[in-house]
Image (cartoon, rainbow over all chains, first blue to last red; front, top):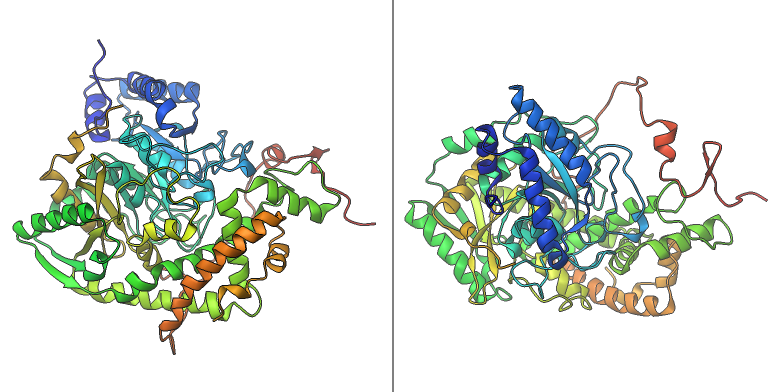
Length: 489
Length: 96
């Protein structure tokens, strides 16, 4: 009988590959068998190219046999949120608009992962154009939470989180504009890292809100997140917002950063709206750090807590309305069959191609940028954004990291919030301000509700100090065995 | 700052080049009214003298050398075109 690789971490799998106890072909076949067994229930995948994955696995095995293995990701399957370009593969953004689109080039993260020997294995479901917190806004239908199939996996990187949680893939990439990596990681009981804005190139990421979007890893362990980040981080001249800085060796740096740390707890993140079981689990994590000798300091982030969602929905929708103007039915994407002239072609193609949430955000973004409203909404939001960034900078001067819940509640039921956009937007209350400030944030599992739903702990770090953030997250992870619990699929 | 009732959905949908049904217009107007009412809370913040923030990282002008380099081939660039003829994208007539 074949050994069970289902819930091994990428680091554990890499050790098996390195010692030749496992071949990449066997690993890819194992993942594909797991997908076959569970994905009719979870629906994490939009598409997969199994032949290409197996061919890449054979090449990896050949490299290893020739003594030319390329490092810890060589031969490891990685899933891509369906918003990141992989040459020759579909790139749908889970939208009817791009249902037939095939990417003519690789995103920079894709190029880097291929160079590291990783195997692209499939495209993962998401909220259409990354707009949502539940993966219900997908033209392909919702993804289910592996822990309870009647519940959402979070979003917008819900397919990426569910695939890891369900044991289909050890590693996936997501994108995070307002919490879209961290919130689904929390709701699915895995690790999700949003890097500092500018650390990972956005070239080849279909744009939603360009000043907020950032690609990052979803994984079973903090070590794995570090390994995946290592491969994708670093300056890229094709992204003008990419930061010119040396990328450290994250795992080596992580090992050096042993604490004890000074950890700030924003008091406003523990108020009304926080589920009591989530609150208790996060308090218990605070207790862990306190016992380890860390100084726990109460801090205050009034604007981040009170104003971030308002700021986010003005800035994100404004940028989205501008970014999504490119979908006009002319050069690529859905084109309406019946249009009386070229202008009508724009109107009809966009009406047919975009789903409900995307249309709603385009309308909001267009309104807040329109003449007479720009100063009142968009410009004012950008100013409050400055104040939110300053607020974080002030508390992070004295703290190595901030600690909070990732999501105010565990996974909610499919359909529960879909008719009330504002209620849905409020599920990102603890994550959104981190994007506004451009900081790195990570969600790690910190327990379960009595009903068996995962709970996530969010840690927020200083800009470009991913090493410190990962070290603090790993300290908690190593002292707990949450990763040994698995959904019963 | 204005309340949600200032949202003229026909005007905005026209700016956005987005055809909406009457049902969508009514629903979005209601939902966006709620959201615009919610974002009105930004009025509580004193922003006098505050510079707007465009980006999180201190990135300013980025210049690249002005030299030709290879890009997508014609075939790659046209791969996703909804309609094409003789290496060009076909569009409805735009001039009389």
